[in-house]
Amino acid sequence: MASKNLMDLLQQPAAKRLKPSSTICSAYEDPKDVTSEQKSRMELNRSLAKAKRNLKLCSHKISNLNTNGEGVGYVKLQELLVEETWLEALPGEFQKPYAENLCKFVEKEISGGVPIYPPQHLIFSALNTTSFDRVKAVIIGQDPYHGPGQAMGLSFSVPKGVKVPSSLMNIYKELKQDLGCSIPLHGNLEQWAVQGVLLLNAVLTVRHHRANSHANKGWEQFTDAVIKTISQKKEGVVFILWGNYAQAKSRLVDETKHHVLKSAHPSGLSANRGFFGCRHFSQTNQLLEKMGIPPIEWQL
Image (tube, rainbow, N blue to C red; front, side, top):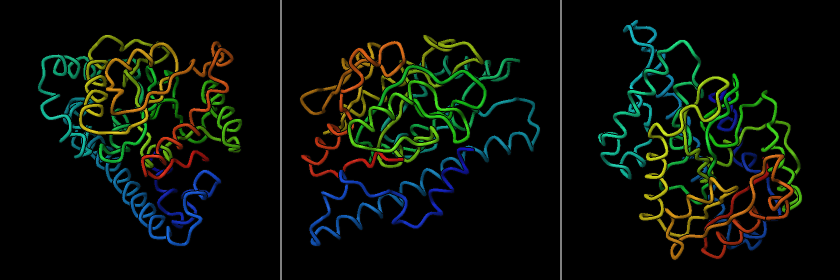
């Protein structure tokens, strides 16, 4: 499903891949800025092509394993992070003792009788879709959806054809209130990811129908390293932290170099306690534009 969605994006004419809105058009009304728009389109096309290539690489590793009948039901976890910019940004991370233990744990879980989500080729989708050099904003989730067909490796996102979860529907409602975006009929957020929104869960795998079942196994240490690396090696990234769990990650961010936006979580239990009305999407674009960075087209 994820492969098809990326293919759909690539096959669209460049002018249609990002729908125009007032938040984007205002930056390009002056004819002198046509070159900037063309540059932005070229960067998006490159990002789409890389994401498609990375997804295909991971899928091929899984299919080759099945074809060769090697006797194990998994590809080694570290082989599923294929985006070179992240491998360069996180040198030696998989060789650390915690990561070796994490890999063994996840591989054992995959080989067990209980389904693990997301599918193997999508475990590192957040990093394989949003390259390190493209990161403009970070939205942090907790762990993947634990129902069949829901998790796709991007926080809050589900493949097209899957019912939109309540938290994501509340995100869409806030987008409509904030920027006037129409509410999509699907929950696939890949279009945000290829623009530079890193949709990062703190824990990247989960057991079927057991929320937080892979918490405290090493994933948090890995994703904390991702956040710290962004903080140390980049500047001007907008960290969007919804709920207490995500807000606790602000300790990893150098707020003298980056921007941190905090609110309640968009879940049905807390959305009315500070998420609705937070205007994080327009704020993110305003911050990016002040730094001379093209804003995010949030409309899906």
